[in-house]
Amino acid sequence: MRTEILQLKDLGRMPNESINDTESIIDVIKSYDELLEQIQLPISYDEAEVLVQIFPESSFYDLQWSLLKLVEAVILIVDNDKYIQLINTCPSREWKELLNMRFQNYLNSKGAEK
Image 1: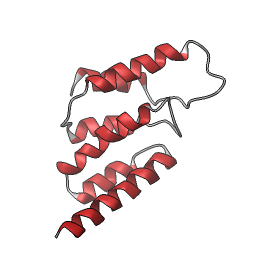
Image 2: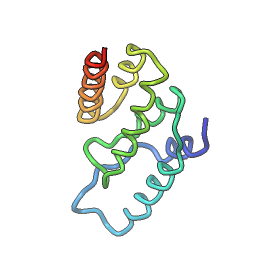
Image 3: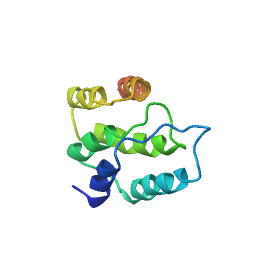
Image 4: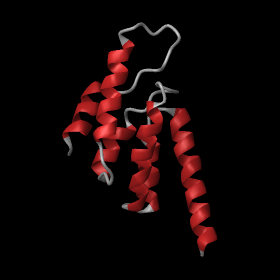
């Protein structure tokens, strides 16, 4: 497993963005952002299992979208059931719902291609 992903695991789940965030949040944002930017696709299923666990409950300075892009890339290397299992481990209800909705849209677009 890549060092960046292990470091993200050590950072833990992204906190929720808040209007009450202090200046110290900038260092936290920078840590997540730099690690996420270093990860090149493709990622393994094991790596996706780690990443899906760090979604914030709602949002964290738009970094959740970088996380989403990485997790969704696993669709290409696993079967549908395994991907759904991955989605269901997401601790955020909001992001779990979005991942499911986007997966359904992906499946629908695949059906339209045939």
